[in-house]
Length: 192
Image (cartoon, rainbow, N blue to C red; front, side, top):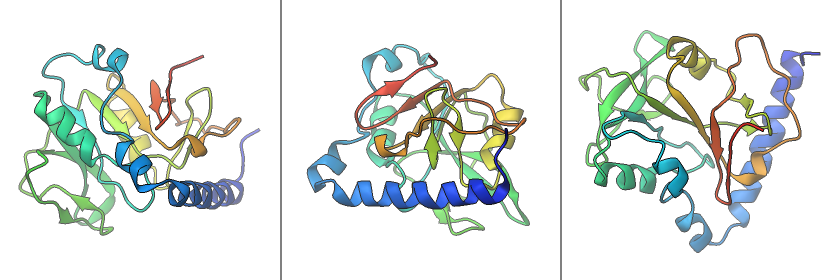
């Protein structure tokens, strides 16, 4: 049975509160050491030259700043999602390096400049509100990543999340695509 929009909204509220409380409970050292590198088995899966999409974290989302430098220093080209002016429901990816400043997008989410080259990622690291053992993802509710995943079905989909964001199971909609992997501060999960 698929959950109602109201049930999904309530679950998002609950999981955002859980995520925020979890992050606030971490010591500064624990926060700073999380998501700095990729585990070796994952690194071995990434082809040289593969374009990697990260995201600019908002609030208590899993951080990506250190990971961006880690990947950049190893030569992988990076990009970030960019909401397009005039229609914040449309998203593309702008080429980006950690040295480059970000600009506020239509929803005040930091993103590459409108003049940054539009590129297509091979790997998409995605933020999420919750995930389950089947690697189903509960996103923010706007459908931006659902549309990206539908447009880029061959891109590897990797979620970044705090371990507190895992739930027993999520109801999925017909358009939901499971992730290939989820990385937390403690472990990484692949399909069961």
